Structures are given as C-alpha cells and as structure tokens.
Image (tube, rainbow, N blue to C red; front, side, top):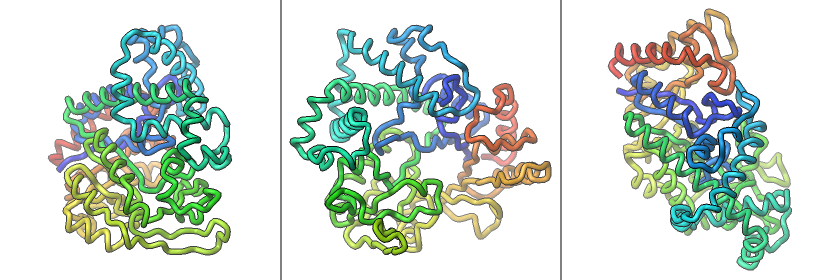
Length: 428
C-alpha cells in the first residue's frame, strides 16, 4: 500500500505569484521524500493545447544560471499568494528577454532538435498562439484562410508571424527542459509523478483549431453542440462534442496519450466518457439536450498500451466503461468525502482521493478532517492521494486558499514528519 499528495505546481510558494518548475518544485520533492510519500499528483500543466506546458510554470532562475538573464532582472514585488495576472505579466516580459539572448548564442542545436521531434503538434500550436497575439481575437473571428486552417492561410501567417512563432516554440523547448529536470529529481527520490489530462477540449484551444474535423462544428466553425459540463467549475467554457466518425480515423487521442506518457509516470485521465457518449447542448437552442453516442471508435486499444501507466477518473464513466476497465485491469480514481474506510468503497485496483468539505472551519470540523486523513491512511485502499491543502488540518487550521503559498514554510518539516509517522504507522 502506498500514498501520495496532490498539489498543482502553480500552487507552490513563489515570489512571482505562481509556482514554477524550479527550486520550489525540487523542494517539494524533498518534502515528499521526508514524508515517505510515493506519489505527487501535479494536476494539469497544459494551456491552450493538450500538448503545451503552461508558460506560467517557467523557472526564471534557470535563465540566470544559463546566462540569459541577470539576477537584477528578477527583482520584483514579492507575492505571498497566487496571483496569475501578476505572474503572467512578469514572466512573459522576462521570457521574451531570455528568448532574444538565447538566439544570440552560436550553438542552439538542441532547440532545433526539440522542434523537429515535436513538429506534429508544435508547429500548429506556435502558429495558433502567434496569430492570437497578432489579431488579439478568438480564432473564430480570424480571416477565413487562417480560421479554417487552410494550407494557404498557414503559409501566409507563418511568414507574417515568423519571429513570434519562433518565440512560442522556444517557450515550449525551455519548459520541457525544465520539466524533465523536475521529473528526474522525482525519479531519483523514488517519487512518481501523476499528471492529469482531460478528454474534453476547450473551444478556444489550438487542439480544436488544428483538428476541426474531429469536432462537431458548423460551417462557421461554431460548435453545433457543446458538452454539458454545467455542474463543473468550467461551466462558462465551451467544450465542443467530438465527431466520432472522424475521431475513429484520427491519431489525435493516441498522440495526446503518447505525449502524456513522455511526461508522467502515471497519467490520470479525466472525462473518459467523452470518448463513448456525451450529453450535449444544442448551441442555438440551449434548452434542447441530445445524447451523442460513439458507435465507431473504441479507446480500449489505446488504454491497453498504457496499462501500467494510467488511472481513470471513475466519476460518471458509466457501467460500460467500468466493465471495460475491470476487464483490462486498469485502475480507477475514486474521490470520497465520507465512508472512506467502508468495505463497500474499498474497490480493487483503485486509487482513493480524499476530498475535504471546507464549508466549515470550526474546531469540530478540523478534528473531523484530521480523523478522515488518519482513517484514509488506516484504510484498505491500495493507493491513496491527499490534497496538500488539507494537511493544514494536522496543524489545527483549514486552508481555504487555492494555493499552498499561504502556509508558513517553517511548518513544512513538521508536516512532513507527521505524514511520515502516519505512513510508517499504517505501513504505506
């Protein structure tokens, strides 16, 4: 039996207002090691594409080490909480400066090697970002030649946005290099990284623009249907439904899973039901819902190839997929708030995530959460994952922030020892 912690990289302590793939990530790996943990679920790290790492996660100290920035460049107002807007502004400015200095160097062969190896997704992603920057518009409002991703339109805008395209490729080259460093540090510490990918894709993404045929889009490229995710936090984001016939003849999902396989020890797949059946809302008639069923595409062959490197979010996957996953012996991830040690919940081949209710913050509730955490360690689940925020309850506090930055750093060693004690006590 093993255990791990969930903490998005962006929530690590960082003076710029957003955690990074640098010292903070390496420090947390040391924390996990001291706490005797086996897994780090880093959440989702992509932005505008299923293949591109979010530039917010860049470690700016890396550029100082490489001589692309000086230490003075990193002087800024220190942030003690998550501030995405501040972080994006600062990091974009310094990333751009490092880009100029990088291309002044004589030997950049490794950059070109990266571009060649990732050409299949990188070219479209960089072009998408460059045209968004040039037009300051949604891709749905671009001129038809580039809106419809025609070959002629791509050639035209590749020339118009040549330098910007190079910049966005450079971003991904640096981010991949930094992520590999974090991955290697985790491997050395015997920590496995869990990364999350979703089968639902936002309309405003390079994925949809570059693969328009595999989604149910109208002649104007507006979705005919959007996936009904109204009960999620992303209810204001449009997720177009798949065109299953086209998806069956596409390599999109296999590329997506293969790419994730390169980055993570374990891939946690969310919204797997998207590849089988969706409840979709008619865009023009929002009150009308339609069930779109996949009769042409099977994902089981893709999952078999990742059998030892994948877990699937169990929520709403339905009986058909549950049977398939059981047959393939692929683990599922179940999230529970209560009854976590009940025999009926201790499914075989399953990872248990604890979700704590933060609606209350009195002492009774804190003690209840502390009990839940210990019960989970004592349970019969093979693998358990606890949200890092919830561990503040071990110190008598409920952390309602969206990030870990607000927790005092000096608590870390004490928290690590407490987790290590629980891990040893229940032989995890």
